[in-house]
Length: 329
Image 1 (cartoon, rainbow, N blue to C red):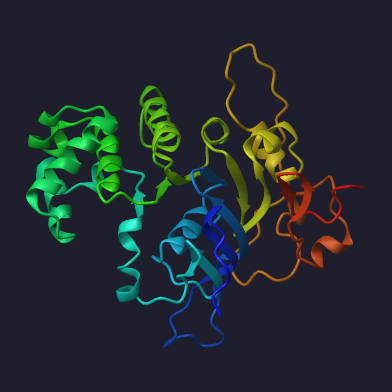
Image 2 (cartoon, one colour):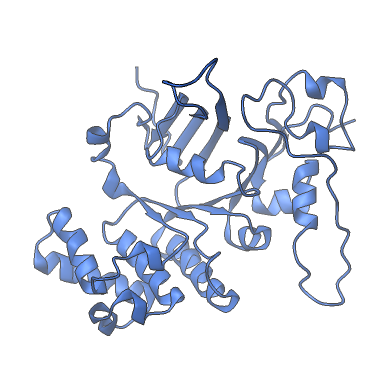
């Protein structure tokens, strides 16, 4: 029986897991080993918000995003889009949902065919989704106004444009289909700092003016703090802290989140920092057993239970959850 739809949420993610086999099934001499990329992750994305996922490289944040879009088949758990379960759909069945969820990639130059003009790229998208020329012309002009670029860019090749212009055009192309949801995977990390601010301001405008829902994946805590409404901190495939950006950053509780924030660059040469240096090695993500994944690097709370049982997210504030056994001690 289909659960009752909650109109406040565009995505509801319940206990999803995604493991990647590390050995070839045909030639494995013993039991197949698995990389635990996403392990029992749950969260909801409100309609009209920018939801941020942050973490170190290899933490699983991009895999989470790709699972939501059906680019990776999850091994267990459930994903609901607008109240409809999409986690078990085939590629053919997912085609119905594709126009409603679009993706913006990290490298804007690689997002475009280098041999096609920008205009041909846009019209190719229109052709695939069976738009007539008048409708395509109208939508292209509308999106160019949104991203504040002139129509002459349509006659140019990708190599003739800057990274910032290409990323704006990638956003415009994603908006061509009027999606309800955008996945932005490290959308500014390949851009100059001065251009990053322009793209971030554009995303904020999409949220504020168009009510666009965005999943924003990044490793930059400063960017996430000033862009996102809700933030989830991911470590080795699990969420260790989650909450509204305002509450999470004003009351950081998990030791991993504290270490991440302490590592951000100075905003001023005279600013004093209190860098937290993590001890120990990052655990191997292959066939991870029970226990806290941060335990061997946590000098503050580590006790016996940490190596015996995986902590679950528990509510510590109105819009704040933390996964730690001994946080209140």
